[in-house]
Image (tube, rainbow, N blue to C red; front, side):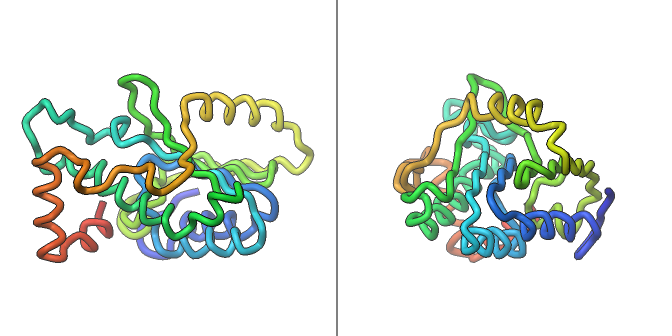
Length: 209
């Protein structure tokens, strides 16, 4: 499948896959900045009783992460923006995290970066894609994907093996309070994010990143 621009075929299929989930849904994305339509479908799936696992990279496993010991660059603020977005999402959904229906996992493995994207739905559908599941991918970028439909369960064992390897380096977020916030960030990062918040361009950044 191929998609580019607003309301493209690939974006519609992603939403349809989430809407089709009845029992279990696993989502991988390197940048936690979900488009509003994706968030809505996730909320509807939770309301249906679907068990959802979302695997994102720890901020230190982000492509744009720069250690605090190195000179600050604006791009270094991105992993922290994604963590802020994840923390807000976790806070809104804390009751479902508490009862185990929603599981947010941070991936980290040494100095390796995390850039995995994809969906696994009800042990039947697997979507392999370059789509980051963010506003830019849904509105601007040219994205592609391969959708695997396995109605007879012929891929179940490779599928389980693949997911087990992904989960191997993850830690489940038990509380939104476990995620850091502005006062915990390096001074230069905190200063930049406060400035962004004051001039109210944070929302614009989330739309284009």
